[in-house]
Length: 185
Image 1 (cartoon, rainbow, N blue to C red):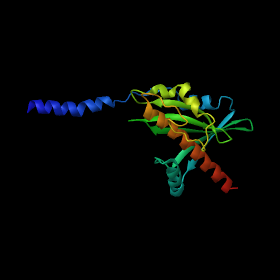
Image 2: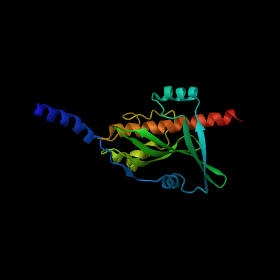
Image 3: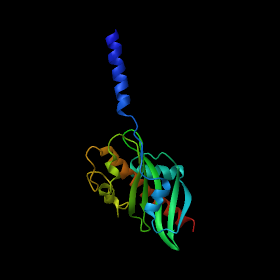
Image 4: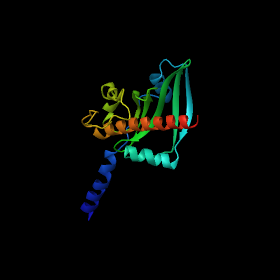
């Protein structure tokens, strides 16, 4: 009986230790915005609210669920020149969310991607520039899929997919924001 309890406790406790969070903050929001918009003289913040129909449309296009209907959009300007949009997004990794900032250029292609907070015990290599630079110039017409147009990182496959999903989400949110802006004119 004692042996069964010991085995049962090990079966229940060991998996909990395997998913222990190891949070590493690489950039604060302020630092991330400066990295994305280094020449900006102004960064404006607006709220983007998706209707249920629009949220559903984006989910269908991405083949993944969106957690929220509301997103903060950062718009960078150098004097009167528009530098693009930025989104701070959380995307679930294997166990915990990865927080990143995604920059979308005025031509609706990806500018830069930075990992701000990484919480998993392994896989933080996705924050390295050699991985993130693959996303530059990608658009909604790009597959943005690991093993197609994105080379994943061995040992960080789920994290690689998570970054790809966040980039795709930022592109869709920007398209939605552009469509809303055009409709309101």
